[in-house]
Figure 1 (cartoon, rainbow, N blue to C red):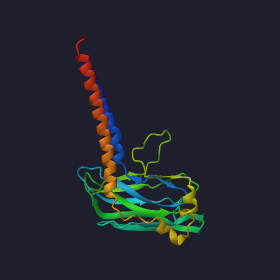
Figure 2 (figure 1 turned 45 degrees about the vertical axis):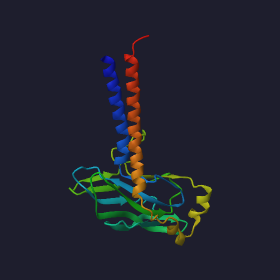
Figure 3 (figure 1 turned 90 degrees about the vertical axis):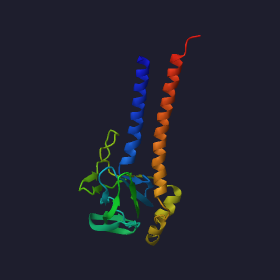
Figure 4 (figure 1 turned 120 degrees about the horizontal axis):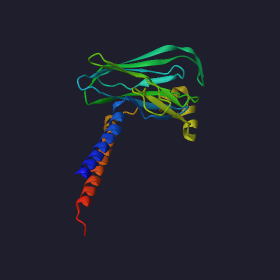
Length: 241
């Protein structure tokens, strides 16, 4: 019986660890993909899951960096949602290869739609030119629920490497490859938005498969642990020759 108890304890711990690893990654507001090249243009999607069982998400407010402003920002229309792009004066002009940038997009707000419990939505944005003098851009995001609750996803990454309670969506920037550096990054201003134009292909299917793959991977780990425990119990009970 003591061996059976130990086996059950190991199985329970493995299951809890699997769920703990799989679910938090699906619960946060994130930016997808999470990496882009410095000096180029990119299309990203702010992925917003609904974390409440008794309320729907009705508003998403994304703040854009003013210390590394983006000269070109455009949003992809999303059926059922109204979008407002706010452009403001920067604390100080920023030099770019297109001239001094004195104003830039500071905030994008989506409202009027609804993300029901158990669902998520992606809000797509095309933007650039990405800065070359930083390795990340942070986009603090506020998520408003139908009952009035506002979740502020604005925590900076912790220095010890652990995850913050409400991490802000962060786009990591990597050095440009040869093609990107001499291609999109050096394109004229008129061509920039076209180079980074959002795809018209549905994104929900890809995102759903990503979430499904995470859950199936976690389930596979649990099944594997169960198999090991059952095998060990079988060997324990097998009479000696």
